[in-house]
Length: 248
Image (cartoon, rainbow, N blue to C red; front, side, top):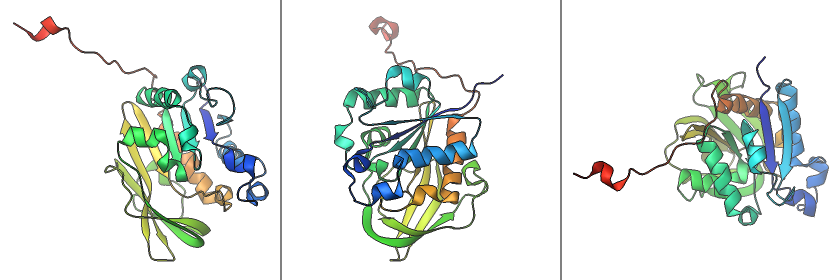
């Protein structure tokens, strides 16, 4: 019998703890991580879905033992990127290189782990006026788009716009358009080492986006794609040849 998919939803949890903005706990009474995990459990009933936050324990809930048992990690961050310890970031990076899947969500574009893995500033344009977002599927052959309508309509959302300073992605899957006329590469994939990465932007703390059925479907599809069922996780070998190996 194959093992169930093991998913960890990580969130700073800072907005919820401070109730900033004041309505966030009304929108997400179980935290944003709770809403994301709820959607994954509904769509992936055979998976094991757990959650962790920045203050879960001394290692942000991302210990070596936890990551070794995680097939896919989802990362939501916003106002506490600098509070994530560098050694934890290095640990997550090592596990991604070894084959762990990573979904980076919304403001996680500015997280230490995303910047480290991509090697660019990952900066973008933004405006938060609760505008409508249309998420257009530009690669319908990709498994992340399965069962997703064209377009996804999100009534209120923070605007993210170009230029988005990321490397050319492996796949451009979604492009968003906003009421103000901006566009944004809102769904992109990358490969780093043996690990698959999916960045998906819809999902701000001010709006109930993580209850949206179509957003939940994208995240569930993204998890299944990033998990690479059947792959044996292994840390990449890094070595330099002995000096005498190439001399003489």
